[in-house]
Image (tube, rainbow over all chains, first blue to last red; front, side, top):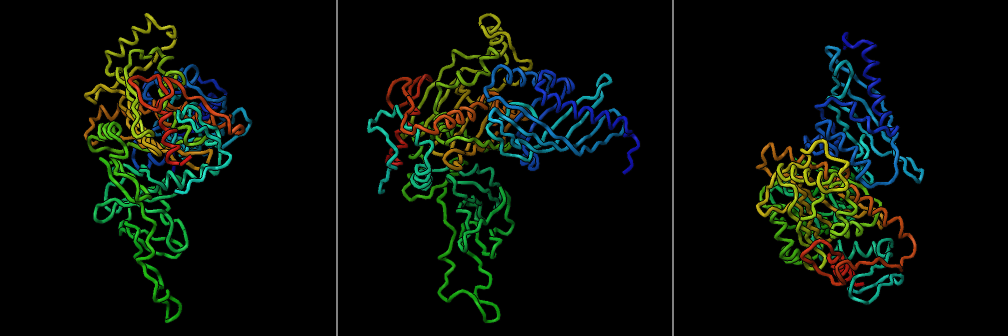
Length: 161
Length: 417
């Protein structure tokens, strides 16, 4: 399938965004996490079983930049959970664009979680389905769905995927 | 019942139910006895919402305790349930989470024994042999080889099952207040909005305690307080029915935008925690959909179900023990068939509050594990359950552990400890 619009340069630009996003979370730089989204956005973390049945329930569902910020404020100051770190591995991005300004992207992810006991476990595996747009010259997520296969969430989920 | 109490379980004969030995949370023998006396005993266990079985042939796989069970809607439109274990050699018959059997048959893949929605055996391959060889003996009677059946009741769209013939009528089992609140939430046809699953490394009874514990609500769950949304004027009640079932309700929350604005102003004036505020207040902008103004109901039906209304979120939480120190919590979220699009969107947004990533509920999994981690030894040591006195009863307020004492009173009776 020829896709002449997607130049190597654009492909690199999209992949930089995908990489920077997970780096931000894994580095616990979460105050910067909302910056990856446009002001009007949709971020959701939804189990594959709901997605495939056409059922809308997600465990995280934010439709504004404010809601993304509130998630992080709650994580920092309200929610109670044990110390934990994520490590995202992302792969196989498939990038589609017609105009070089909006992109449909799907990629795989695996999140390993490590707590204070030092045990690293496969915490959440799934795929990202994204709509990426150019916002004041910079690529941002207008929609990002993390559709997870690991439909049994261990203990709780506080850090975004 | 020939009561056998594990010899190492030392539980005071005192009937005040204020001190529970930790070994009940961490003992394989106690766990196995619970499966026999509670889950196979005279209890009603939540299986499904009727809306999960919309058509003839619909089915769902679930559990009663740790026993795999399939609940079905037959060709006669009735709901049935049976243990998911072939009558032949014990294989799992249904291997899907949910679905529809177009021909109404449930066939084991191992030797293709086929059963109907009721769990009756319909077909045995090579029953009369092949070419005069083999076959079942003449006295083999298919009627004698049904699946192990579960007695089922559909209570206002919530489907429950029991293995015991002694389980009382469902309303009598629940009690007046619990059945009233069940009917209140299930007052019209529901629409399933999705499922999430949370796997918690703790004993299932730590979670049962949690759902009967209004004491912890504003202390562990700091979301409202952090954002200056603490509702000190909230009024409520804790109600115990038949000891181990309960209802917690509260009203005076966040019914409308005006109330939210008032709270924000209040916060600016009075609250010390005023350094944070929600950037997007639409999360809490709900609709008052019940005439009684009640904004929080936590209904706990022993042993396996919690039904909740938190603002505009409605959900069944099914507690499925997976061993003495693990359980799965299955959240089934719903609205009503006649919801407006606006109300449906409010529910979807407010689901951020509940579930495995719930801003006001995620800590319940954490607290359960905190307890399990710490009671590994010293099984004869006990907890202290004395808030609002020593009696196992409800109260006209929410500063109590009376419902937890009720849980243990009922537990000791059914377990014969």
